[in-house]
Amino acid sequence: MDHEQLKRARLDHGWSQQEAAARLGVTQAYLSMLERGIRSFAALSRRLMQVYGLPATVLPVHEVREDVAPGSLAHELALLGYPGFAHLRRGGRTVNPATFLLTALAQRNLEARTIEGLPWLVLRYPDMPKDFLVREARVRNLQNRLGFVVTLGRRAARRDDLQPLEETLADSKLAKEDSFCKELNDAERRWLRENSSEEARQWHLLSDLRPDVVRYVA
Image (cartoon, rainbow, N blue to C red; front, side):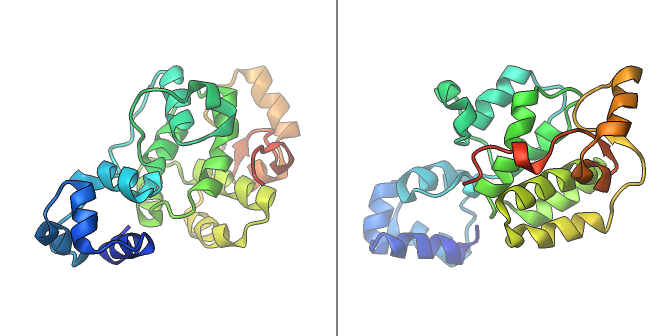
């Protein structure tokens, strides 16, 4: 989100700068600087999300984490609105969905139910910062995993707006075979070499996840 979108969000509510500033707990002069791009709104992002009803993509992106407890990731996905984890939607702090997505993909072992929610995430938050996603995925060799998630979401929902991101990731696709967020034993690896989905093979991954099993895409 940039300063022009911030101004548009205020205008969508029909508020003057003075009215919006009062709701945000800042001065009109400070809000004016935010809307002109003179000041960063990162420190105010959670308040902006609450007052303006903005999506979690307004939150700052943070460092990708590894070896995160499975329960923590399920909770974070619930706070981002994933219907499959509605029962976990309590307490905690919402994170930027781009940070969450890359963190999930960086795990050695990710719970199956959380894996199933990742295509939903790219569909729910199409305005995730693409430059951040692509850059950080390439740094961590996650572009195949991310590309697979995007492909699953695009085909499940028939969403052509995801194709540019998919194509960008394909430009740096890794040739090395990889699993999809799961450590495999030899028997599992052999089975998946025979039974991986078309989408997984496209991204040199071992996974039987297919678009027709992606939930909550409507």
